[in-house]
Length: 279
Image (cartoon, one colour):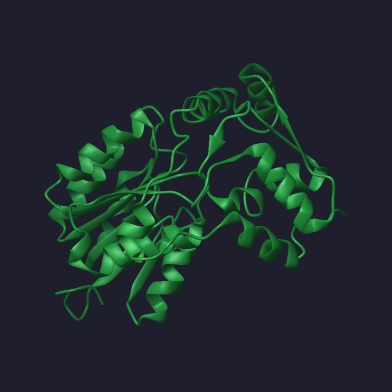
């Protein structure tokens, strides 16, 4: 239970089946905290595009971990998140912890909306997750042996989703983090070529990185999703991977009092699960 929460209070996890959300849910339950993970397939159902679904999700919620799909940088996201934050406060939700993107100008508007909502707030600005390579959209490319991204040779301080979840739980359960903005990164800068090489070493396979143009990447995405979504995601990736995020931050250390996990430990552990074994 979070500090000063009532006996019937729950912690809402928006995106409770997501990459960080399910980790937050597991940690809170291990602490004996009542949790309500919600998504479009949960009961109660939660859909960012249907504000009528928000009230049931927020019922008796003392605190909430908020993740927005597909990304806070998307057009209109700040208005939607702001409306949700205001409704949360009006319904009695005391504390909001927002997962944000590092170096995303669009996401900062959503951050402002949460800060201005009247809630106790914490912002988690996260670098790219390690788990994008084994749980998300890059997994198929790893299995095929070629990681293609519009990132050139730009370095990124990839971060472990486990560290992000630890920081979220800390912020949800302790007032020490109220009013803090934590930039969460790993301990070193890596290019996508570096990541491919380390995954290749861990798996004993030849994994290559190929730099593609934004136009080539958008065309590839357009075969997997609506054209407008492909355009927006390509623009987002081009923005965050233009080099301005190629630096380390001390957010994990500030939030958790320890060093962040390293990709060098993640890759062998992930490989041991067999997730990267080519069929």
